[in-house]
Length: 69
Length: 268
View (cartoon, rainbow over the protein chains, first blue to last red):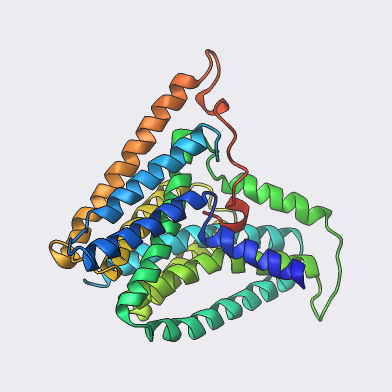
């Protein structure tokens, strides 16, 4: 049972998060910061998420091509 | 926004997954037994249809802001993983997905497996190979159909795009009776990654409360910008990879073998 649950969890982790969890982490943090800027500081931070996506991709590619991921 | 970008994105994403599923189904059917293969295929389609039928209407009940925040984040993460792999393949750090060699691998494994009759199925190996292949490839399609369809309040259009892709790939597969190895799979995956990342970023930011300049028209800028940046990364990595190749060695032969990755599971 536990083995089945583990493999079920591993499948969905791999399905959604994929090979580099840091990409997911960067995007979640960027979304949280965007929401904070919009709702707490009144800044319409539409530019933040695309920049975070480009940075996450560059970071992940750097790690993959330098053998760190 | 019109339904056309929705239908096209789902069509291309679904076509890529359908090509990979076709390779597995052909390997099972031609090497083992067609009846059991079709039973596996049908069982997987029933499971996928049930997931769409249950999740589709349920997800549309969520408030639009929450839906866009969650779905946007998931789509952006999903899209970035597609893009990452497509860029690594384009730059030569990862081998291009080759349907012909994938087919040969499946055929070799299918020939070696013993024939077992189980639960009313003549050849259990053919059944499970076909079932798993179609279900795993189909799950990504279901994810894209539901997230795109729900966000646009148009699951019907997303289903049409997916169904059209499955029909086109199936008919082509029946006509050529071989894996569709000439399809530029990496270019298609690159395009899907760009669309998923762009839409995910757009919806995620909207869910976080952002007002995009120009509203939906911002996508007309965002998609080309994501494409340009991704192509720029690919070009830069390709150049670096070529420069790092040892003299007299093909560029694709060097570079860290980072590719113990999840392609076998997700097909991305």
